[in-house]
Length: 237
Image (cartoon, rainbow, N blue to C red; front, side, top):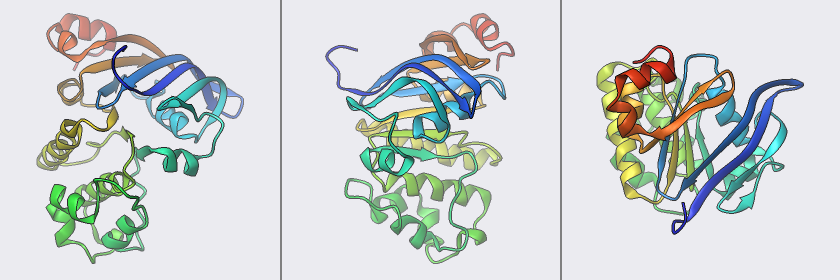
């Protein structure tokens, strides 16, 4: 990784919920503008990993650095202010607020503004004054991503952005994520059940099993070798 600006680094991470340890010995790093996909069957610790990076679990050991600064002991809202964003699996939009209010509540200075996120997701412009509770699942997902973006994070964590969405909506969401990725100023960590989408999206991949990283490498090499994919993933695509 030398010669590139390290955006995010995790070393020796051991974490879980209370005394229960779910993650063990997690190491990963990303340079600015890089994308990393995290694969693994249900229940292997992928969501717990993102929640741990965000400060929502019990950290037993390890170091998390955001652009060189250690953040493992600071609370969620401060991590957010320093430039770590999360699009949670449950979306967690404010259902009693309008689309506009959901976005304005999260605004921080930077490239991503009300104008640029509605350009990215024109559907949100059409639903601007609708309440969160009036949105379809796809629109809620777009809003969750837009809300994370207007915080102008340096590193964005995405937890299962395609879950429960119709294929045509998944296509729209991933087209938007590719545009975010291609700007090159934000590191992205994607947890995704659709193996093909995840391997297409990122440069690098890690595969998790039972709370540990069991494989890491380039997405291209895993795509090119279905046998290896079946071996490391257990169930292939």
